[in-house]
Length: 474
Image (cartoon, rainbow, N blue to C red):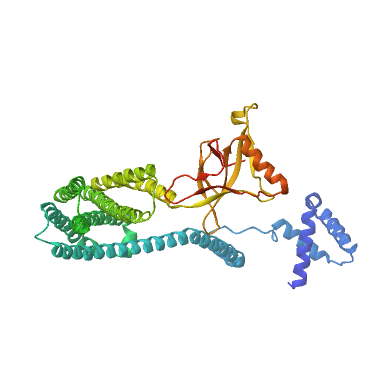
């Protein structure tokens, strides 16, 4: 059968399959079968297709025999393989997606773990290197401390210093014993690969080694502190000797000798007991007392020099009797203070003597202030009593060279002493009016000399009557 005929028969079968009810009704006998064939031919002719009756009959027969009906094969393993092969492109894409997803999931899990392991290994290696370095450093320190102990031995040391050295040697021995024990344990630490396999146990071992290294470091630190204590005691001895040398050639009073001996004894007791802090405190006391003695001697020298110089100031001056007695009294008081070492009192008395000598040595004129813009006199109501007036003439002291001097003046208004160039002297009202009239005459005072002060006298001699008292402000 040709392919066209077969295809046409298949089409007829398909057409008849859609007309299944009609076929079953029309094919009961031959006559109706022929009519049916004719009817089917008419259907094709209406479509412009000429189909022979034989082909229609073959189609009817094929329909009855289900010749062109597709029945799916049994789905066995071979069929499944064939289907996969036929659809291999689709399955390849699915497999690629699943593989890629699996790879991404594996990467997301494995990479962090990988880098975590790398970090742990790097940290472990760093700690291991640091531990090895610490061990070697402590061993070197132990050797250095042993040498220091050996060099530090001194037969002149106190028993306390010798005991400190012995304790230092024992601490070094303990530290070295720990380091000797740790050496093989450090060498046996696992490598990087073994560390990842048994990380918890390795970390525990490393922590134990670090703890023992700290114990060794502490023992060596104790030894170092003991050696420092020995050096401190020796330094105390040397510094005490140096401080005592500062007193060579200095004559000490009984009180000063007792103070120095007490401080020195405290230092020696502290050295014998190995108490460095107490020794330092006692040394500071000794140094302070020696400084005080030197300061006192310097002060004494200054006082004696000043006292000697004051004794020559008034040798050719006639001194009034009362001032002469005061000078003698002050000089005796200073000599007594110097003999007892009371430099504070001697200095205070010397200041008083110096002021009296300066006062007796001065010579000047008291002149009434006569300048046009300056007041020559003032009056006051004492104690705010409006019924009473105190009158004052304003004067200034002029030395032999014509220079205005500053004098210490006690003000009767506030009882304060000030060094001033101008001050008021209280006078009777008549003197005030006399000076006032002199100035009003021509704006100047013709008789400006109010008084004179000669060398050897304390007070000035006035040319006008005075009522006593001064003021420094107006």
